[in-house]
Length: 250
Image 1 (tube, rainbow, N blue to C red):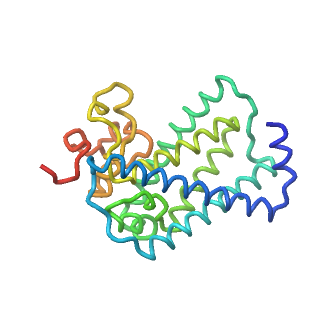
Image 2: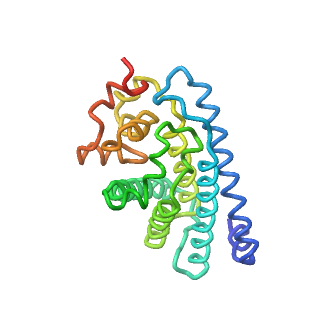
Image 3: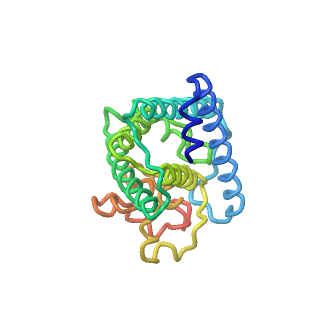
């Protein structure tokens, strides 16, 4: 870990920018690839209608998101070098606490931001682009208005500026963030029907949960959990009934 930190400290800014861009490209490729694999594996459990033919706009929006995510990573790197962002190097129980705390804090913060993005005057500016593609495919995870990408990225930078997480805890959280986002956009439900009845697990986000939001944007604003939707009454009343099914399916 010490060697990695010293390597990062010694990187020139152009090399760091290229490295972060390459990192985000690889992350996107892996997310879309694994998402498409799950979509084929669980094709018999669709939770949305098949997406339309891939458009040029989707590709351009996705490329924009990858570039902006790289820029956000680069800004975080600069904040770390400036001493504004601090990371711990421990690998003990604190890592698990970091993952839990960051996940809960980010889940709540993104729930609030997501609901704000649905306010009438903000929706066209921030979120309408994503909802234009109401039959999601794995790539839809990256189909975002640039302002929305920057909003969520800024939220992340604020959190890590205020809380000194461990390198490992932050890295695992970021991996989980991509995993949850990918599962929410694969258009099929990989989890069994029993999932919604199992304690603890029933509060974890699923593909059905986010597909319902794409189908009816009045419900299901959470990202990693259903906690805030249950607390604030925004969980779809048909969540349990439609679990693992396409909306409107009998």
